[in-house]
Length: 584
Figure (cartoon, rainbow, N blue to C red):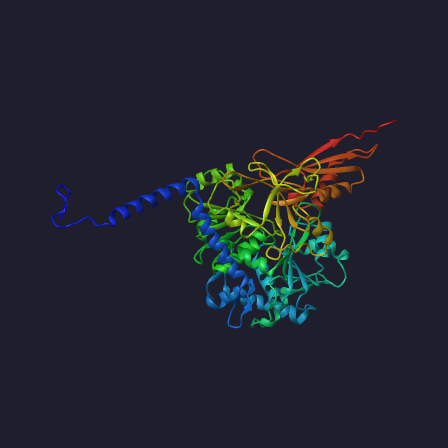
């Protein structure tokens, strides 16, 4: 019987589990409140961990009926078979389907297989701008099992010659717009290099690849030419200044390329997305993350020869772009454009890249709408990366417990005067406190190797720190100073060494100083980066000392830097130093 005044009909009893359910519900509400209060990013961190695990399984496992190791090229061939008529590349209004790119790259492979000395494992240097043929040649060479070295299309003369020599190519493939650049260094090129150009009419000593492609076969290239037995074998060489000296050819193995290709997926891209790539393909962001990411998804990319701030949003609307890649400078350029009506009238939902300053980030979102900024960190040759999966403004990622399951890294104390890590009396390094800038280092091991630079053992060894916390340990020195806050978010602080970053490129101060020092009236030239308010990175300052009884010839200085240096490496400021003579 129900108790009088209970409100229940006579004969019904209160279920014994109701108080338990009520208590359980209250407990869950309390735990949810506690989790949001103490661990607000728990679920996003966990979701990120699950994606990391899935990426690891994708990139390290064997696939296919025969259990072969799968590469980025294999993924492309799978997509070409699965969705042959889907647009892969859109360039200047022209559409190149997955099948089109497959067939064109087959032609490249057959031409070089039949008319060049190339064999599996050889290196081929590629000097081309952003265009479909960059991808056609890249994939065609990959189908022959060749290692492709992406040359920076901005470098000239001495620097370009250095890059070519360092990767020791048997063949050099040149875009139509770079024949003059190559002709300038032709007499100084190492003997035995076969030069091919994507142009019908070519000078003597250079072979026309374009002419031979017109009659080449586009039939399938046997997989035996490019099948691999080890994912840690070389796939590409991508040049980077790192933190010191002339450009160095960072070795990118198949495993690293596969990991990079999952980046777009990890940030939430899908096969239906249209990705806008304006960054140069010779950099890892556009080639490995951008092109490789589209292949992983089976998505479409809109490729542009060069970034244009004035045409950016017009292109996004014209091609229904949903995702674009950026560097910090790109976002700043867009924010500096005159305001127009309908700036939020677009379909862009994600922006993926690195280097966006907090103030530019906020301004960009306020002005152009609800676009999720997906910031990440990773050096081309490095063995560690971070992804800002929460959208925290200004951060490059989070250093959580989950992240440390995959990467062993530290932020260590650094002596800014001596320009080296601080070691105690026993010779060991130590971690900085949260909120303090420290040098980011990442442990080198079987899981996270460092492969170094082609033909440059000295610089490879220079990037490693040994006996850091104990005898025998080895860490990769990123050359970047970072700060970790109380919530474990990481922020870029500064770069060490003799390089600085300007217009999205690394500038080697020793290289610029040597070029200026070649002038007969210069006794000494020291180059360094200086902060310019409102600009990303640092601008170049050349501090020069004249030889006794010599005068400064500004016209010759200008001619020298324009002839030998890419635009981003040319100093923006000139500082005169007086030569002091001390007597006893």
